[in-house]
Length: 627
Image 1 (cartoon, helix red, strand yellow):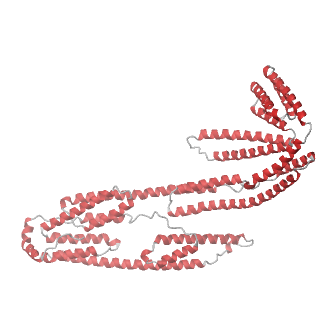
Image 2 (cartoon, one colour):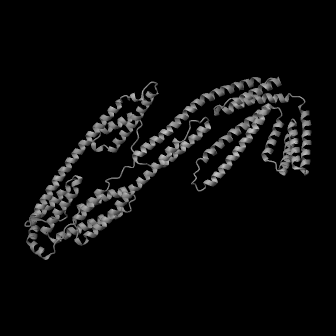
């Protein structure tokens, strides 16, 4: 520790020598420097972690070439510029890629029939030898650097031990105060300029140095005014350090606060003693502030470890979640899209989490990425296979379009109508095509069929007279239904009468187009009224209404075919919705606050969709029976 005692000119030193005896006789014994407190502070600081762990993950390299280039770059640097963490991360990445290559080579070897897995020997990797050479260069540089540093520390230790020995020798010479005092100041300055010593010797060196200095001051009893001036200046400097330490309590970054506290302790050790009456007080305040900063620093790392443990558990749960997803049986685009959404949700959840511990974080990420890669590779294979299937289906449907277009101008109404009806049935047996072609090829086929049936309708004679007769017959049915509505017959008899009239309605052919909507609305109104009055199920009412609609279409197979396609698309859409709801029900947590009500609502919707599917299936079968 460097003393702050001013160096007196030679004349003043002589005068001080003459008055020394009287000064000592009239003055109380001088207090020693509080070296024990300073050494204690040194031990506390040295007991803490020297620096914060790095929060920034090293840059990830994806190929061996990049890793070799980075290793060569590090090997070319000076030892002081080489970061051990970067070297360790390079080794981890390199051998991860090497292990993946060996794994792939092993799988290829074992895939060959007749190969014994125990006979497998991986091929030599020329890159590994080059990588090891770079690591060897780095290791030699770091070893040489450590040797130089250790030698310097030992030299510093020897120099400081020599100064301490000299100070102890001088502290025993009480007869040469004026001559020895400037030399002591020089030795103090030399001691301060000497660099660090080995960590295990640091505390003992400081204690020995402080003890030697205090012996000199105590035994030689230098001029009280000079010492008081020194104490006053030292006290002001230490009070400034206490003020700096107080500011660290408000520093948000605990790592910066801890580093700054270490600097303050270094400065504290370099400052000389203070008056005895305030020595314990000022050290106690500085120690208290140090303890507070150190506690925040320790709590920060405890909290970070807890967060890392929580993140590790959450990432492990996500890995298990995606690994449990079974996509081996998926056969439709909708199913693959739904599964893709679940993987994307898992990736979004992963990105929301922070780091786990370094080792666990790398292992979990490799595990999670492997599961995702496996899924997306399987999805790519499915899409590739489906692309070929869709192309074949498109060729078949285009062929049907060409055959329909060749028949659309035919005037052989019956034979052509039968042929087009057969083509429509064949169309239904062909699977899906690519979405970008679906509407185009369907409208092309539909246009050819519509054109023919429109021409057929225009050229059909006697149709209008039949339609007028049918209109009159349906109006009579409506009047009979109204009579049932106004009367109060027995319920079973009324239901039978209504069913018979509905069957009669369905057996009646087309009515004039201009009258169609009006007569049908009148019919539906009276039927619905009777159904409400007799409390007949609405589903029966809807089916009755549907069968009536089919009756309106008569034998128009083109219209029946189009209606069937519409119902089939609605059926597929409801089926997809049902599957989505059933999958979503599996994600509802029983611990959720609103889980029960949500489950009940989901179940109600699922049942509604199932009823709707059953009704649509019944309608499709009804149409199929008429085609």
